[in-house]
Length: 226
Ligand SMILES: [Zn+2]
Image (cartoon, protein in one colour):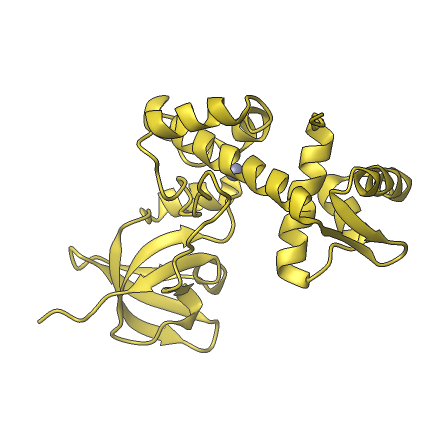
């Protein structure tokens, strides 16, 4: 018999997946912060998830996903990112307005439903924020050539590929700077005093980029063209 997963369980598994990728283990406290839950609620849910064999939970330390738990987390992330593509490509939402809707939509439908959505969208490889979309088997090929824009050096030419922060205010700020995925720039200068940068776009327009913005943009270097 197949267990059905509740919305709140899926949210826990997704958060544990992300924390585990960053820190090796998802501590109770960091789960509580991410989900704005009380410590008691987190402990209760982790016990429940452990009884379903979706996580392994060590008291006072935290949780890691089992293979089963990981499968559910990845399929939730896959649905989230596919819905973001749908909302931007088909419903013409802007990229800063889709995350909240996708948080709800990611919980609906079964595997067949998701595969139809994927096919309808033309099996996209990335979401509107440049994040890779895992395939139906749970595999995803990240773009290993991507680096943080704060790691660039002068005269390098690069293309913006993603954001490490998809909060609306950051994305709106990028819109105001006219920075979007796929756009190419060249590094003109870097100012160690405040960590800011000067870039120029393909029309030769130069712009000043703060340390905060550069630190949250993912870029791919281009080969220099003569
Ligand atoms: Zn999102």
